[in-house]
Image 1 (cartoon, rainbow, N blue to C red):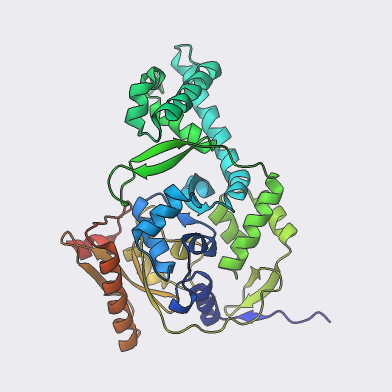
Image 2 (tube, helix red, strand yellow):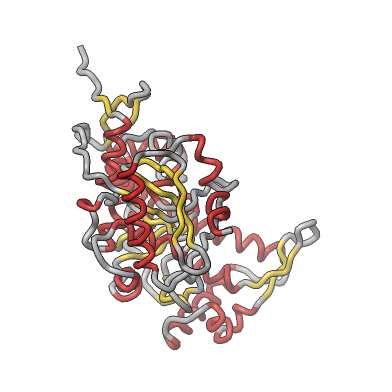
Amino acid sequence: MSPSIPIVTTVERRNRLGRRHRLAPSAHAATVTEAADAVVALHATDAATLFLSARARLAEGGPAAIEQALYEDVSLVRLLSMRRTLFAVSGELAPYVDSSTARAIAVKERSTLLKHFGEDGQGLDADWLAAAESAVLDALDTLGPSTGSQLSAAVPALRQKITVGRGKKYEAETGVATRVIRLLAADGRIRRDRPRGSWTSSQFRWAHTEPWPAVPPAEARTEIARRWLHAYGPATEADLKWWTGWTLTDVRKALAAVGPDQVLLDDGTTALVAPGDTAPEPAPEPWAALLPGLDPSGMGWADRGFHLDPAHRPALFDYAGNIGPTVWWNGEIIGGWAQRADGEIVWRLLADRGRAAEEGVATEAARLARWVGEARITPRFRTPLERELVA
């Protein structure tokens, strides 16, 4: 007779989230890289999201501590990776993310640009592209970290224009500078350095760097799957496929290599956890969090039913499925927040969880306001509730 499968309740899943995602105060991280590793990777498409997601998980430290990790220590790096999205990961994990996901994206990006060259008919080809890339790296060695505009001024090839979709309805002339720089970044030969302006800016300077050490892709995917299961389990094969953007075959091979345990959720479905990770998670102290749009704790699963009432989804997500700024209480999304033009942090609860929750959220909102200071935050992907709160 086979042993019974452990049951993991919704409450226990929320307890895991509070502790493992470093959101409960007693679980807050001591360093920025610990905060990133806790959720495997921090979303970085929106510059402010990266900083606010790290803030919510750190025991102490302001924006300068995160900038130190990104630009001085380079212990946190941005990579175009899972789901063709920009993430920030620890330097330790970066080679695995690069090999498991970013390499394939880089190959596709290069193939697409060369296809555009061929269709454009000006004679641009792989040799031209290699020479342009080499010139960009030489310019960075001479100039130091530089913006795209500065590189275009220094490298004539970047001022080249091509026509995309020639003869079709969507025909358009476009410059190659952004595409060439994007390729170099995807290949790990340049990285995003300090932006122009504050930590909320996405107008980055670029710095010359060395590609990440090679890791066998299957080994890399196994490591990513193992870490993801520890952070997000209980979860399903479908959740991992959604989060990574890998093929179903690669997901199944990675999971087979990890050898996860099975658990039953309280709705009767079967889910996966990291090997041996079936013991109940002790409940942390009551906690509140104000997380930014695209935060990993809101975007970590294809099915978010254990921490989000489906009735609240229309207010908190945009039309493309991107989550906006959210208010959390003990592992559950109970509302949303926004920052007004005068700097005030405003919030609205969509679920009543009692006076303790209201007081906890108010305290966290005040802490967030102090941390943000004079900065102003407008999410890149705006949601109905966020727009309503700032109106």
